[in-house]
Length: 543
Ligand code: F6P
Image 1 (cartoon, helix red, strand yellow):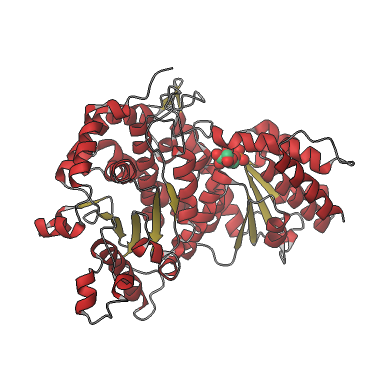
Image 2 (cartoon, rainbow, N blue to C red; image 1 turned 60 degrees about the vertical axis):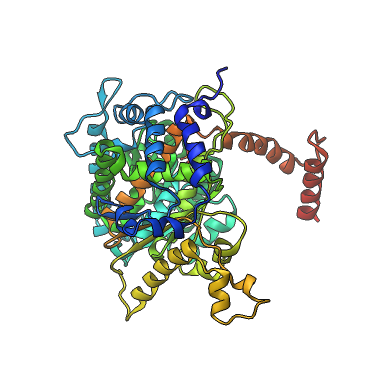
C-alpha cells in the first residue's frame, strides 16, 4: 500500500511555512496593510458575490493554494468528472450529477451511451406527471384530486427534497401541502399523515436502491394507512409513485413501474436532488421553476469547468477551506444563512460535505496523515446569534463561518430585511475585528469586567450575497458547494463519492433487530455494554 503523498508535496510544505509565517497575523493587520482589501478579495460571477476579505489569507497563500491544486491534478480531475470517467473508484462508477442539469443536445457519454438524452426523457415524464397532478387531471382512487404529497426517503433521497421545498416555498403551489418522512421512528410517518385525507394524498417513495430499511418500513406503513383508509389494495396504483434506480425492487414492493421515475448509478444519493428524486420539488414549484433551478446548477457547472483557478468560485471556496482546515487547524465550518427559507440548508450540506469528505484513507487506501472533511453545522441567522454565536466570538475554538444573504426579501415587511442583513454584516465584522481590551476599557468598562467583554476577533468568515432567492439562485448555490467539496476531495486524494462508513452500523443493526424481536431473550455475544443495553431495552419495553 502506498504512502499518502500530499504532505510531502513541495507545495504543501511551502503552505506550511507560509502558515507559520502569517497564520497568526490578525485580520486587523491584513486590512490595515491593504486599504482596498474589501474590494480586492471579492469574486463575483454567476449571480453570486463572494467576499473572502475576512479570511486569514494573503495573496501568497492564495497563490500557493492554487499551486497545490495544480500539483494535485485538479484541472485533470475536473475534466475526468465531466467526461464521465469512473472517478468513484471504490464503486467503479462515473460521477455525473453535472449531466442532470446539462441542456438538451449536449452529449455526455457513459460506456458510449449519451446519458443527457436519458436525463431529458425522465424530465419530460416528470413534467407531464407534475402537470397532471397540479392541474387536477391525476385523480386518486376515489376520483378526488391530489392535495397532499408525502415524500418518503432518507439521506440523499430526503435532505435535498426537504431543503429545496423549504427554500422554494414562496414559489410553491400553496393549495397543496407537502410532507417529508425519513426517520424509521414511527412518529415521523404518523405525524406526517395526521389529519390528511388518504383520498387526496400522493406518496412518493424515493430510494436509489429501494432496499433502505427506513424508507421501506415507512413506505409499508404508508401503504397500510392508505389501503386501510380507502378500503382497497387497488388504491396503491393511484396513490403511490416511486423514484429509484431499481425497477425490480419497486415492482416487488407493489408499485407499478409505469409509475416509477428512474435515475442512474452515476448519480450519488447526496447529489441527486436535481434528478427524479426532486419530483416533490417539481410538484411543489412546477416544471418551469424546476428547469430554472437546473439552469442555475448548470451555470455554476460551466463556471467551475471553464473559469481560471484564480477566478473560480468553487475552487476558491474549496481552497479557503483547505487553508482553514489544514493550516489554521479549524475543525468545523458554520453555515449561517440569513434567509429563513434556507433553514434546512445546513442540514442538507451536512450530508453533502461530511458523507463526501469524511474519509480517512486516500484513493489508494493509505491512511491519511492530515485532516480531511471538517464538521459542517449551522442555523439560520439571526436565531443562531442568540444561541451558539457566543462560542464563535469568545470561545476557544476557531470556527470559520459562511454567511449567506440576499439583497431582496421574498417577504418584504417594513424594515425587517434591512435589520436581518445588518445583523449578517455586523457579525462578520465583529468576528473579524473584535474589540480589544483597550477599547473596552476606553469605553469605561470596569477593569474586572474588561476580559469578559473583550473580543479577540481574527475569526475568519466568507460572505455570499445574491440578489434574491430564486430557483436559479438555489441551483447555483448548491452547485457551488458540490464542486467545492469535490475540490477538497481532490486535494485530500480521497474518494468523495462513496460512503462505506455508513455500512457497519447498518450491519450490526440487523443482528440487533433479531435480538430485540426474538420471543425469548437470546444468548448475546456483544461487549458487556451492548449486551446490557439490549437487556435493559427489552425490560423497559416489556414491563
Ligand atoms: O446513508 C447512506 C445512504 O446510502 C446515502 O448515501 C443515501 O443518500 C441514503 O443512504 C439513502 O439511500 P437510498 O436512496 O438508496 O434509499
